[in-house]
Length: 225
Length: 298
Ligand SMILES: Nc1ncnc2c1ncn2[C@@H]1O[C@H](COP(=O)(O)OP(=O)(O)O)[C@@H](O)[C@H]1O
Ligand SMILES: [Mg+2]
Image 1 (cartoon, rainbow over the protein chains, first blue to last red):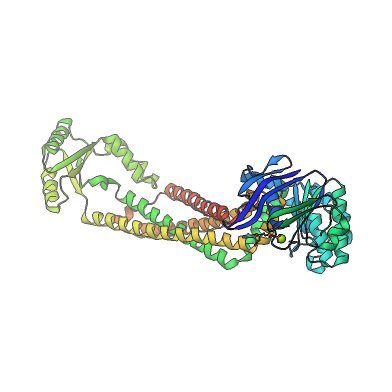
Image 2: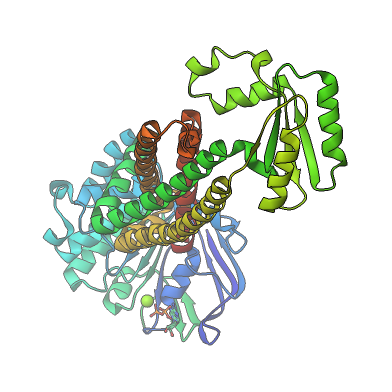
């Protein structure tokens, strides 16, 4: 589903954020990217949805070489990739359901599809009773559920999550992990950057560890270490 | 599709009202620029009609009697062509004079209805070798004497001055209009940049969920174009008002004065309006397209 072949990313000609990275992720896998802050986790995720382009190497996503992808096709790539962030990136002036609907509206989905899918996905993430709330009226965990709903409402093949539990307390984090696990069980490939030891250790999934831009470990059913 | 139209209308409206003063400043600038271009075109077209016969260095016209014989006409033609002080002399027959006459008095059909080609004189439009009042006066006197000539009419100093004045005037106005157009382009770009900055969170989300560049850009472009359209329509309204004022002044003027021939045909005003609307929209569209391509990238 995702394959990195000797990928090197250099920022501003001097910061080597990723060096010769080799990664092969199968469809339906759940993968943790772990490593200290600044080790290159976010960079790897940003390369996967072409927010960044590599200086060297090739990247395949869903069978396509995205290094070759012309810029007008990038939006269509991203429709197959949901993204979730530590800071949720919700729009403060829109309600919960408007935030989720927005993601479908701006890719031109018809109204009846939006009407049926938005409540369904919000039900799935456990927010059926809070459709009309604004983000500031929700707890951090609830906000993250909204952002996951928004990332998943279009049923993407891949979900990229960049420290989705970074701002949440352990109990709430566990709830978010259960949700991501459920999404993964529907066949969605999940790649999640984290430096939350507790979470990585409980999930027991594949772990790829980065150290200053270099992959130092790639282990099935691994722990944080 | 219906949903998209809703979306674009909603977003465009929101952008416009986010910063009303900037929007107003932009629209007013477009309005003044369009008005100036319009007035300059009006002046040009009016002066052109008033001085239509005196284009291209024609300094005097030798009108023949309507009943002048072909021999008399030939002889005047020969004298003109042999005279070293005459550079060119262009003959106009009755039909050409009639066509020109219809053109000049197109706005007063009650006048043209009674005229037929035979009552109009044939004439020679003469361009002298030098624009020298003494030389021209000599030629005028000389040809007025020839048999078959009814009269010789010279372009007066007044006409010459009006032409150069109006040329200067409309060039000046056009230069000012050009500067204002530049200001309008910058302001439109600026409004769009402000709107894009105000909505950077939305734009970030749109990119992440896979909205296409053009989908993101369209509301901002429509905003710029709408400002151009509103400014241009106001400018065209202004042009009609100016034209109305000029028309009233011309009607009140002494029929024989130069001003009375300063007519702007209503079809000219219409053509100018279409041109202004097209120009305004094109300018706004280009400014918007540049701004959105510059500020919204994948
Ligand atoms: N946009 C950027 N411009 C310059 N340097 C960057 C940029 N993004 C990240 N970096 C650098 O690249 C390295 C890896 O960063 P990042 O991928 O964010 O690591 P992580 O997500 O593991 O904390 C760091 O040294 C960081 O400072
Ligand atoms: Mg990071």
